[in-house]
Image (cartoon, rainbow, N blue to C red; front, side):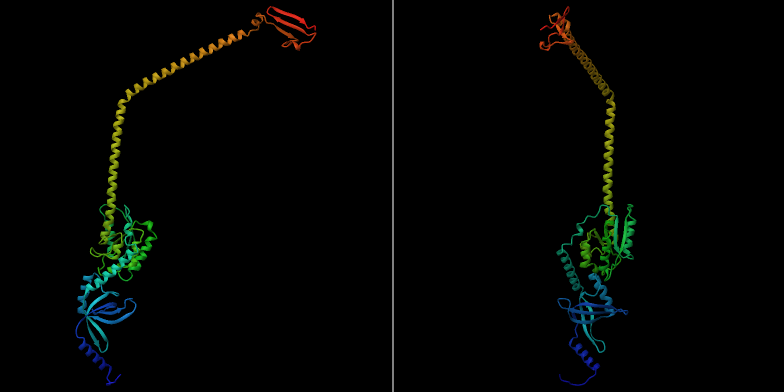
Length: 413
């Protein structure tokens, strides 16, 4: 290193400034990532720009950039209108800058223009990466597979209590022309800023702890700028919505803006008011079905009653003749029973008389007198009938009964 001369720091910085102005007088389009953003009270905006390696962990370059008031007043609304986003930390941008060097403040860039299409492309790429990952994880359509109940009247709302959209939603439900009644429970969460992901997930967890108390979950934002929608392009938030056990309805954006949260939700509507109208229409459709069923049931009951009335009237007309026929049938049946009973008794008496006659004859035939008259006799010894001769002994006295008297005898040998 060769020392040419001794100069002051101011002189050295002045030469650097002159060199930069001479060597780099033109404007350049620079790709960078915003690592810091600080709007000032005077209307300027101060940026911190960085470039990182492919891992995103190592800084390859850093620079300060200033957007002066007149430029900032034009660039900010233009960028937000084109992208639907506001400039924020972590966003990749394509800026038109000139290089400046100040003897006191050093090296910096002055921003003159911005290309929103570059940022939109990066945002679209990041959104696609999130959606691709959700699809790879197999959860992107899970919430849409759930059935919204036929009468979704118990509603868990995730929103900010002060959000105009929450008030619009409640008013729309309360003032519905059909007089339907709804139970609405608010679970508070941030709807803009860096705390959206954490607070909405916490609110979902709180709803899940009471899931038997609700039919659907509605995330509503409303009243905020379109530029604040990117906080709903979150993998973690989308993953929780996709896996939630109740149908999730989102009303956080506008008709042309679909966030990742909208894509994985069961149903996406434009606004909180539209979310209320969606719920009311569901209940109305069910009410129409129930009213139709009630009419059909009433018609069926009326028709059946009319038919039965006609049938009863016809039966009433036929009753006298039916009764006469039945009377004749029953009288004939009773007469038949009586005749069968009388004949049965007669037959039974005849049989019994015949049996008595036979018994009488049998008894008459067994009369001992008749037997004796036919030549038989009866011998007794000591009052007992003699059946065998061997039972007798000499000296026994016998009495023999004959038809016309008795004979006394004695056994002699």
